[in-house]
Amino acid sequence: MIQDTADEAFTADLLRGHTDTIVLGVLRRHDSYGFEIYKSIREATGGAYEIKEATLYASYRRLVRDGLAEAYWGDESQGGRRKYYRITDAGRAAFRSNISTWVATRGIIDDLLGTAVPAHTKGTRA
Amino acid sequence: MNATDPIRRSTDVHRLLDEAFAGVELTPEVQDLKEEIRDNLLFRVAELEASGVEPSDAARRAMRELGDVRALVDGGASAPSSGRSESAAEAAMRYRVRPKPGFVVRTVLLSILAAAALVVLVLGLADVMSLGTGVLIGLSAVFGVALGVVTADALRQETTANHPLPTGRAVAFGASTGVLLAGLAFTAVVIVRLDLAWIILGALLVVAAIAVLSYLGATQTNRHKAWMLEQERAATFANRFDEDPAAAARFGIYTAAIWTVAFVVAIVLGLTVGWIWAPVALVGGFVVMLITLARMLFGAEAGRKS
Image (cartoon, rainbow over all chains, first blue to last red; front, side, top):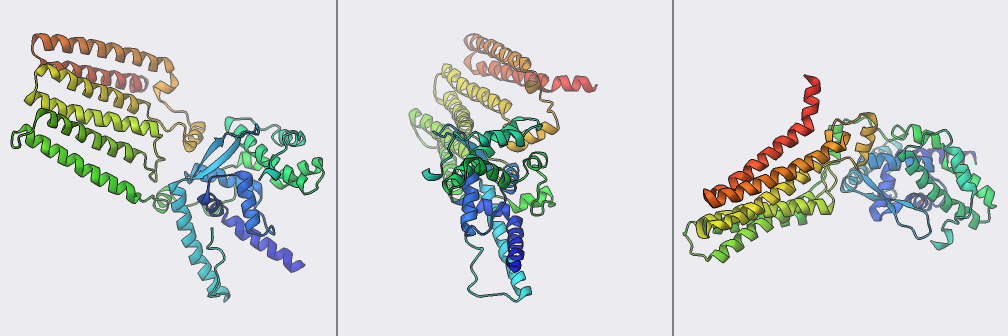
């Protein structure tokens, strides 16, 4: 159990370090809004880990400021306004570049830790 | 998705959200963030309630999960991120956008078409090829339309430094560029083939296009872009027309007066001296308008410095 908690902290840290890329990965599939992005990340981790919503809001603002994503308010029939995010071409380029950096880093860490597994495919999806 | 749609009767969320934002200055940006958070919180509360949590607990739990709102408002930009120490140039290299293949093909083909139209037009005008006047006018139109489409298409593309122009604005730029080029080509056809009185139509096209382009250029702005809004908060801009809307209105009236005079002079010149001289008045009007624009936009600042 103690081991589990340490594992969770480690995984949560790793995820947090890649928040922007993960969000871009979600937006790459379709325009999305905060809660939906939050939910797809939670579902992708099987509900075990989550990125804090505050971290996600900070990420959205960074992405918009850097021109990697654009925000727009959608029209909602339920009465509330919903803020959607759209990935830009610059965002797609940044995503591709981050993915190749990640793949390279993962290779190095796998080599260093001796965990290299040929059939290892986790992390390249999205 | 419907099962987790927000139940908007929950007042707890609104109260807790107001408490979280208490004492924070409600700039438009913060208000924006608050509305975004509100919508997402309502979703989360609905989800929790659907899983059997008491409504009031659900609201508090959703707020707790949200984390520290204040940190988000204060340090929006400096929140934890993955290595943002790289220079702007490095970021630009990393995030550079490659042109889309479709765009490259369209541009090349249309440019070839425009070049071909221009060459045939020149050959026709020089009587190397014998072409009817109608064909020459058609070639002028093809030349203008092709380059107009190239212009609009290029402006619609996103680059590293720029988001694409809004479609309407890109089309306006493209259309006026096309009309300008077609008008110039038509003027050449008039001089060689047609009665000189037609030159007024060519001049009209050219001047109208230049006027539209000037308008588009003068109103071109980044001010609705997110990073500009951010910078605006840090430093105020010294654009005369933004600071002083009355100056912009004055410029509009001056422009109308300048062009009215220019057109009257053009017609008078055409009827007295000859139509070939009519465009001189329009060129004069254009120059006066540009000088007025320059003086009104930047004159005040220069005056303050000296």
